[in-house]
Length: 390
Image (cartoon, rainbow, N blue to C red; front, side):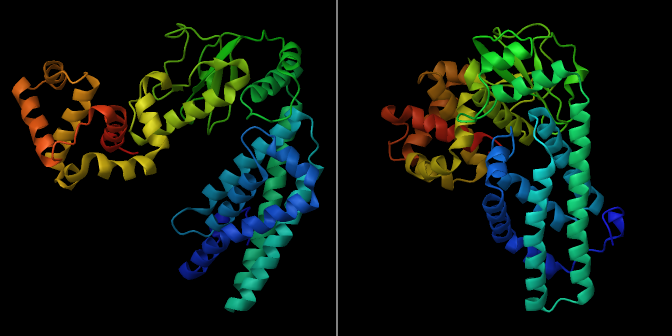
């Protein structure tokens, strides 16, 4: 049974697959340790690649391996995911001038750990011999599939125009996390024929929205990954140039100094996540700086959940049909600077309705809400409570 025809692979018994899933974190830990110990230079270099780390690569690979026999997810989908992952990794190696030999060694090390663990599990759990044989064969086939995909990505990258390769190296460096070892940005920009700006912003595009679908000026750097494409905009103007892609669901990260592109990309992708959940509107594009409250609430949900009981108390115990109008009124009232008339206009209700609701809130909370000294905290909690999908 091979990954060449993954649709022929039968699903594992439910309890066996659940056991594999339970053991995944420990297996990933062991595989990561084997690579770090056996190939420390490669582990450090891999952690410097944009968007990847040894841990992430191993975790995704093991997850795909288990998914091959998942009755809820067809084998071809898991195989396609692993192919896409390793094509990107191979392309990264080609872009950075790193040979694939060490990647093959890393996969071999991790594969040995996986097979040893499978054998131990088989003897301990008394699996049928045919099941162990199938899983072991699938593990080796998965490694072969990954190596072949990485080789294709590497070859495709190395055959590209050298100037395009330099532009992609610069793009990756501009959004790399702080501390990532790289050439100075001035050198990379010079090699790419790109004028280094003072500031930049990152526009995250929805999955499948290929940058080549848009007419872009030459100074814009694009990531063409189908799963997470983005554009780097040098010295962006407010509200944005006329050519800015009007893709519905795109999110523009904050404008940052040129050496902090990772910050803009991180917030753009967080905003994109909330757009996909339906929490934020799918504008074209949506700007992170216009959604500070929701993005902040998204990052602090557990803290705001704990604070909600202290700030709003009995309001949270009301049924939704009573609770929601009170919370919405309170949030708009605080945003309007405690102005009931303006609140009524924003909510399209009568001023007396607003005042009645405020009295209800005060009575339910024994006059403690809203507390003038806790307006900011209360607004953040209300934003979190009223934003769907957070």
